[in-house]
Image (cartoon, rainbow, N blue to C red):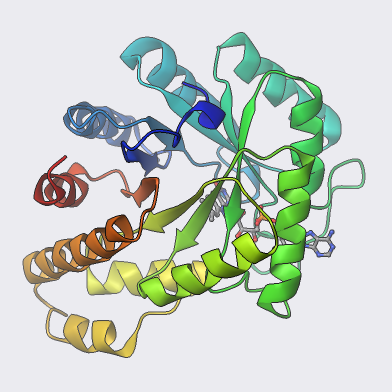
Amino acid sequence: MKLHELYKTKKVDISIELFPPKTEEGVSEMFREVERLNQYNPAFFSMTYGAAGTTRDLTLDLSDRLKNKIKVETMCHLTVVGQSRDEIHHTLEFLKKKGIYNLIALRGDPPQGAAGFEPHPNGFRYARDLVREVKRMNYFSIAVAGFPEKHPDSQNRESDIKYLKEKVEAGADVIITQLFFDNRYFYEYLDQVRKARIKVPVIPGILPILSAQQVRRFTALCKSKIPLEVEAALGKFENDPEGARKYGIELAMKQCQDLLKNGVKGLHFYSLNKAHSVEAVLQNLGF
Ligand code: FAD
Protein backbone atom coordinates (compact mmCIF):
# COMPACT_ATOMS: atom_id res chain seq x y z
CA MET A 1 0.00 0.00 0.00
CA LYS A 2 1.25 3.49 -0.77
CA LEU A 3 2.22 5.67 2.19
CA HIS A 4 -0.50 8.20 1.48
CA GLU A 5 -3.11 5.44 1.85
CA LEU A 6 -1.78 4.31 5.24
CA TYR A 7 -2.54 5.81 8.66
CA LYS A 8 -6.12 6.62 7.70
CA THR A 9 -7.99 4.01 9.70
CA LYS A 10 -8.20 3.34 13.44
CA LYS A 11 -5.63 0.59 12.98
CA VAL A 12 -2.09 1.56 14.04
CA ASP A 13 0.37 0.94 11.21
CA ILE A 14 3.72 -0.52 12.22
CA SER A 15 6.85 0.00 10.16
CA ILE A 16 10.28 -1.48 10.72
CA GLU A 17 13.59 -0.01 9.67
CA LEU A 18 16.50 -2.19 8.51
CA PHE A 19 20.01 -1.35 7.36
CA PRO A 20 22.16 -3.08 4.72
CA PRO A 21 24.42 -5.63 6.48
CA LYS A 22 28.09 -5.72 5.55
CA THR A 23 28.31 -9.47 4.91
CA GLU A 24 26.29 -12.15 3.09
CA GLU A 25 25.83 -13.90 6.43
CA GLY A 26 24.43 -10.67 7.85
CA VAL A 27 22.04 -10.43 4.90
CA SER A 28 20.75 -13.99 5.45
CA GLU A 29 20.31 -13.26 9.15
CA MET A 30 18.43 -10.06 8.36
CA PHE A 31 16.01 -11.92 6.09
CA ARG A 32 15.36 -14.45 8.89
CA GLU A 33 14.56 -11.58 11.25
CA VAL A 34 12.26 -10.06 8.61
CA GLU A 35 10.34 -13.33 8.43
CA ARG A 36 9.85 -13.29 12.21
CA LEU A 37 8.72 -9.68 12.24
CA ASN A 38 6.46 -10.16 9.26
CA GLN A 39 4.15 -12.24 11.46
CA TYR A 40 3.05 -8.97 13.05
CA ASN A 41 1.83 -7.66 9.68
CA PRO A 42 3.88 -4.49 9.53
CA ALA A 43 2.66 -1.96 6.96
CA PHE A 44 6.19 -1.86 5.52
CA PHE A 45 9.88 -2.49 6.10
CA SER A 46 12.32 0.26 5.22
CA MET A 47 15.91 -0.06 4.03
CA THR A 48 18.37 2.72 4.89
CA TYR A 49 20.77 4.37 2.49
CA GLY A 50 24.30 4.24 3.97
CA ALA A 51 25.91 7.51 4.99
CA ALA A 52 26.95 9.56 1.95
CA GLY A 53 25.36 7.02 -0.36
CA THR A 54 27.99 4.39 0.50
CA THR A 55 25.56 1.47 0.32
CA ARG A 56 23.60 2.59 -2.73
CA ASP A 57 23.80 -0.63 -4.75
CA LEU A 58 23.22 -2.84 -1.71
CA THR A 59 20.32 -0.70 -0.50
CA LEU A 60 18.69 -0.98 -3.91
CA ASP A 61 19.37 -4.70 -4.21
CA LEU A 62 18.00 -5.45 -0.73
CA SER A 63 14.94 -3.25 -1.28
CA ASP A 64 14.29 -5.16 -4.50
CA ARG A 65 14.68 -8.52 -2.70
CA LEU A 66 12.37 -7.48 0.12
CA LYS A 67 9.70 -6.24 -2.25
CA ASN A 68 9.90 -8.82 -5.02
CA LYS A 69 11.30 -12.02 -3.45
CA ILE A 70 10.20 -11.90 0.18
CA LYS A 71 7.14 -9.95 -1.00
CA VAL A 72 6.84 -7.53 1.88
CA GLU A 73 5.88 -3.90 1.42
CA THR A 74 9.09 -1.88 1.21
CA MET A 75 10.11 1.74 1.59
CA CYS A 76 13.53 2.66 0.25
CA HIS A 77 15.60 5.46 1.83
CA LEU A 78 17.33 7.87 -0.54
CA THR A 79 19.73 10.74 0.26
CA VAL A 80 21.22 13.45 -1.96
CA VAL A 81 24.74 13.41 -0.46
CA GLY A 82 27.53 13.12 -3.03
CA GLN A 83 25.24 12.36 -5.96
CA SER A 84 24.38 14.23 -9.12
CA ARG A 85 20.80 14.70 -10.27
CA ASP A 86 21.45 12.17 -13.05
CA GLU A 87 22.58 9.55 -10.55
CA ILE A 88 19.56 10.19 -8.38
CA HIS A 89 17.30 9.99 -11.39
CA HIS A 90 18.85 6.67 -12.33
CA THR A 91 18.12 5.36 -8.82
CA LEU A 92 14.52 6.55 -9.01
CA GLU A 93 14.06 4.85 -12.37
CA PHE A 94 15.43 1.61 -10.89
CA LEU A 95 12.98 1.77 -7.98
CA LYS A 96 10.11 2.47 -10.35
CA LYS A 97 11.09 -0.47 -12.55
CA LYS A 98 11.05 -2.70 -9.46
CA GLY A 99 7.66 -1.45 -8.31
CA ILE A 100 9.02 0.14 -5.12
CA TYR A 101 6.71 3.12 -4.83
CA ASN A 102 7.37 4.14 -1.22
CA LEU A 103 10.40 6.29 -0.59
CA ILE A 104 11.79 8.43 2.21
CA ALA A 105 13.52 11.46 0.69
CA LEU A 106 16.43 12.73 2.79
CA ARG A 107 19.34 15.08 2.56
CA GLY A 108 21.66 12.74 4.45
CA ASP A 109 24.62 13.65 6.63
CA PRO A 110 28.01 14.88 5.42
CA PRO A 111 30.74 12.21 5.23
CA GLN A 112 32.60 11.66 8.53
CA GLY A 113 35.27 14.28 9.10
CA ALA A 114 33.67 16.84 6.71
CA ALA A 115 33.13 20.31 8.18
CA GLY A 116 29.52 20.52 7.01
CA PHE A 117 27.14 19.50 4.27
CA GLU A 118 28.26 20.47 0.75
CA PRO A 119 25.85 19.70 -2.06
CA HIS A 120 27.12 17.90 -5.15
CA PRO A 121 27.82 20.54 -7.85
CA ASN A 122 25.11 18.99 -10.04
CA GLY A 123 22.96 17.74 -7.22
CA PHE A 124 20.38 18.87 -4.68
CA ARG A 125 20.92 20.89 -1.54
CA TYR A 126 17.96 20.00 0.68
CA ALA A 127 15.59 17.08 1.08
CA ARG A 128 12.88 19.47 -0.15
CA ASP A 129 14.58 19.59 -3.58
CA LEU A 130 14.63 15.80 -3.73
CA VAL A 131 10.95 15.64 -2.76
CA ARG A 132 10.14 17.99 -5.68
CA GLU A 133 12.12 15.84 -8.10
CA VAL A 134 10.51 12.62 -6.88
CA LYS A 135 7.04 14.16 -6.98
CA ARG A 136 7.57 15.21 -10.60
CA MET A 137 7.74 11.55 -11.59
CA ASN A 138 4.17 11.11 -10.42
CA TYR A 139 4.82 7.57 -9.22
CA PHE A 140 6.13 7.58 -5.64
CA SER A 141 4.53 8.16 -2.28
CA ILE A 142 6.99 10.13 -0.18
CA ALA A 143 8.01 10.27 3.48
CA VAL A 144 10.37 12.85 4.96
CA ALA A 145 12.33 13.09 8.22
CA GLY A 146 11.20 15.09 11.26
CA PHE A 147 13.17 15.92 14.38
CA PRO A 148 11.31 16.21 17.71
CA GLU A 149 14.49 17.50 19.37
CA LYS A 150 15.15 19.72 16.29
CA HIS A 151 17.68 18.88 13.60
CA PRO A 152 21.22 19.28 14.98
CA ASP A 153 22.15 21.87 12.28
CA SER A 154 19.07 24.00 12.92
CA GLN A 155 19.19 27.16 14.97
CA ASN A 156 15.81 26.50 16.52
CA ARG A 157 12.70 24.41 16.17
CA GLU A 158 10.78 27.22 14.43
CA SER A 159 13.13 27.27 11.43
CA ASP A 160 13.13 23.48 11.38
CA ILE A 161 9.34 23.44 11.15
CA LYS A 162 9.35 26.12 8.47
CA TYR A 163 11.57 23.88 6.32
CA LEU A 164 9.54 20.82 7.24
CA LYS A 165 6.50 22.61 5.86
CA GLU A 166 8.39 23.24 2.62
CA LYS A 167 9.03 19.49 2.33
CA VAL A 168 5.35 18.74 2.83
CA GLU A 169 4.29 21.42 0.35
CA ALA A 170 6.75 19.93 -2.12
CA GLY A 171 4.83 16.65 -1.92
CA ALA A 172 5.62 14.63 1.23
CA ASP A 173 2.79 12.39 2.42
CA VAL A 174 4.09 11.49 5.86
CA ILE A 175 6.73 12.59 8.39
CA ILE A 176 8.73 9.90 10.20
CA THR A 177 10.69 11.14 13.19
CA GLN A 178 14.16 10.70 14.51
CA LEU A 179 14.30 8.49 17.62
CA PHE A 180 13.67 10.11 20.98
CA PHE A 181 13.33 8.72 24.52
CA ASP A 182 11.22 11.41 26.11
CA ASN A 183 7.73 11.59 24.62
CA ARG A 184 7.39 15.21 25.70
CA TYR A 185 9.66 16.19 22.80
CA PHE A 186 7.30 14.45 20.40
CA TYR A 187 4.16 16.08 21.80
CA GLU A 188 5.68 19.57 21.77
CA TYR A 189 6.90 19.00 18.24
CA LEU A 190 3.53 17.69 17.07
CA ASP A 191 1.86 20.70 18.58
CA GLN A 192 4.13 23.05 16.64
CA VAL A 193 3.74 21.02 13.45
CA ARG A 194 -0.05 21.27 13.66
CA LYS A 195 0.10 24.98 14.54
CA ALA A 196 2.09 25.43 11.32
CA ARG A 197 -0.89 23.80 9.55
CA ILE A 198 1.10 20.75 8.48
CA LYS A 199 -1.58 18.12 8.25
CA VAL A 200 0.14 14.90 7.17
CA PRO A 201 0.64 12.05 9.69
CA VAL A 202 3.66 12.33 12.00
CA ILE A 203 4.96 8.90 12.90
CA PRO A 204 7.25 8.54 15.94
CA GLY A 205 10.55 6.70 15.55
CA ILE A 206 11.21 4.24 18.40
CA LEU A 207 14.52 2.58 19.22
CA PRO A 208 14.30 -0.36 21.63
CA ILE A 209 17.71 -0.06 23.30
CA LEU A 210 19.84 -3.17 22.71
CA SER A 211 22.84 -2.25 24.86
CA ALA A 212 24.29 0.72 26.72
CA GLN A 213 27.22 1.02 24.31
CA GLN A 214 25.02 0.75 21.21
CA VAL A 215 22.57 3.47 22.29
CA ARG A 216 25.40 5.85 23.18
CA ARG A 217 27.03 5.29 19.78
CA PHE A 218 23.71 5.72 17.97
CA THR A 219 22.68 8.89 19.80
CA ALA A 220 26.15 10.39 19.37
CA LEU A 221 25.57 10.11 15.61
CA CYS A 222 21.99 11.33 15.43
CA LYS A 223 22.30 13.72 18.43
CA SER A 224 19.13 12.56 20.21
CA LYS A 225 19.35 13.00 23.97
CA ILE A 226 19.50 10.13 26.44
CA PRO A 227 17.47 11.35 29.45
CA LEU A 228 19.30 11.31 32.78
CA GLU A 229 17.10 8.58 34.25
CA VAL A 230 17.71 6.37 31.19
CA GLU A 231 21.46 6.96 31.41
CA ALA A 232 21.36 6.12 35.14
CA ALA A 233 19.44 2.90 34.46
CA LEU A 234 21.84 1.94 31.66
CA GLY A 235 24.75 2.38 34.05
CA LYS A 236 23.48 -0.68 35.90
CA PHE A 237 23.65 -2.80 32.74
CA GLU A 238 27.10 -1.79 31.51
CA ASN A 239 28.29 -5.43 31.51
CA ASP A 240 24.89 -7.06 31.35
CA PRO A 241 23.64 -7.04 27.73
CA GLU A 242 20.62 -9.20 28.60
CA GLY A 243 19.60 -6.77 31.38
CA ALA A 244 20.06 -3.78 29.04
CA ARG A 245 17.93 -5.46 26.39
CA LYS A 246 15.14 -6.18 28.87
CA TYR A 247 15.29 -2.59 30.09
CA GLY A 248 15.17 -1.41 26.44
CA ILE A 249 12.03 -3.45 25.79
CA GLU A 250 10.36 -2.12 28.92
CA LEU A 251 11.24 1.48 28.07
CA ALA A 252 10.11 1.22 24.43
CA MET A 253 6.89 -0.46 25.51
CA LYS A 254 6.05 2.34 27.96
CA GLN A 255 6.88 4.94 25.32
CA CYS A 256 4.63 3.22 22.77
CA GLN A 257 1.75 2.75 25.23
CA ASP A 258 1.79 6.45 26.00
CA LEU A 259 2.04 7.41 22.31
CA LEU A 260 -0.84 5.11 21.41
CA LYS A 261 -2.93 6.56 24.23
CA ASN A 262 -2.25 9.95 22.69
CA GLY A 263 -3.51 8.86 19.30
CA VAL A 264 -0.48 8.27 17.09
CA LYS A 265 -1.37 6.64 13.76
CA GLY A 266 1.74 4.52 13.46
CA LEU A 267 4.98 3.42 15.11
CA HIS A 268 8.27 3.24 13.21
CA PHE A 269 10.81 0.91 14.84
CA TYR A 270 14.56 1.25 14.44
CA SER A 271 15.17 -2.50 14.61
CA LEU A 272 18.93 -2.54 13.91
CA ASN A 273 18.11 -5.76 12.04
CA LYS A 274 17.24 -7.58 15.28
CA ALA A 275 13.74 -8.98 15.67
CA HIS A 276 13.74 -9.93 19.35
CA SER A 277 13.14 -6.55 21.04
CA VAL A 278 10.69 -5.20 18.46
CA GLU A 279 8.82 -8.49 18.60
CA ALA A 280 8.64 -8.35 22.42
CA VAL A 281 7.34 -4.77 22.32
CA LEU A 282 4.71 -5.64 19.70
CA GLN A 283 3.60 -8.71 21.64
CA ASN A 284 3.33 -6.76 24.88
CA LEU A 285 1.30 -4.10 23.10
CA GLY A 286 -1.07 -6.77 21.86
CA PHE A 287 -0.26 -6.68 18.15
P1 FAD B 1 16.67 18.54 5.27
O1 FAD B 1 15.20 18.52 5.44
O2 FAD B 1 17.21 19.01 3.95
O3 FAD B 1 17.26 19.43 6.44
C1 FAD B 1 18.67 19.48 6.69
C2 FAD B 1 18.99 20.77 7.46
O4 FAD B 1 18.82 21.90 6.59
C3 FAD B 1 18.07 21.03 8.65
O5 FAD B 1 18.82 21.69 9.64
C4 FAD B 1 17.01 21.95 8.08
O6 FAD B 1 16.37 22.74 9.07
C5 FAD B 1 17.84 22.78 7.10
N1 FAD B 1 17.05 23.25 5.94
C6 FAD B 1 16.14 22.54 5.23
N2 FAD B 1 15.65 23.30 4.21
C7 FAD B 1 16.28 24.49 4.28
C8 FAD B 1 16.23 25.69 3.51
N3 FAD B 1 15.39 25.82 2.46
N4 FAD B 1 17.03 26.73 3.85
C9 FAD B 1 17.89 26.63 4.92
N5 FAD B 1 17.98 25.52 5.71
C10 FAD B 1 17.19 24.46 5.38
N6 FAD B 1 20.55 9.40 6.76
C11 FAD B 1 21.18 8.62 5.86
O7 FAD B 1 22.31 8.91 5.46
N7 FAD B 1 20.57 7.49 5.36
C12 FAD B 1 19.32 7.11 5.72
O8 FAD B 1 18.80 6.10 5.25
C13 FAD B 1 18.64 7.91 6.69
N8 FAD B 1 17.38 7.59 7.10
C14 FAD B 1 16.72 8.39 8.00
C15 FAD B 1 15.41 8.06 8.37
C16 FAD B 1 14.72 8.84 9.29
C17 FAD B 1 13.30 8.47 9.67
C18 FAD B 1 15.34 10.00 9.85
C19 FAD B 1 14.63 10.84 10.86
C20 FAD B 1 16.64 10.35 9.48
C21 FAD B 1 17.34 9.55 8.54
N9 FAD B 1 18.65 9.87 8.12
C22 FAD B 1 19.29 9.08 7.19
C23 FAD B 1 19.36 11.03 8.68
C24 FAD B 1 19.18 12.33 7.85
O9 FAD B 1 19.63 12.14 6.53
C25 FAD B 1 19.98 13.42 8.53
O10 FAD B 1 19.44 13.73 9.78
C26 FAD B 1 20.22 14.70 7.72
O11 FAD B 1 21.16 15.52 8.42
C27 FAD B 1 18.98 15.56 7.52
O12 FAD B 1 18.19 15.05 6.56
P2 FAD B 1 16.79 15.76 6.18
O13 FAD B 1 16.21 14.93 5.14
O14 FAD B 1 16.02 16.07 7.38
O15 FAD B 1 17.34 17.15 5.54
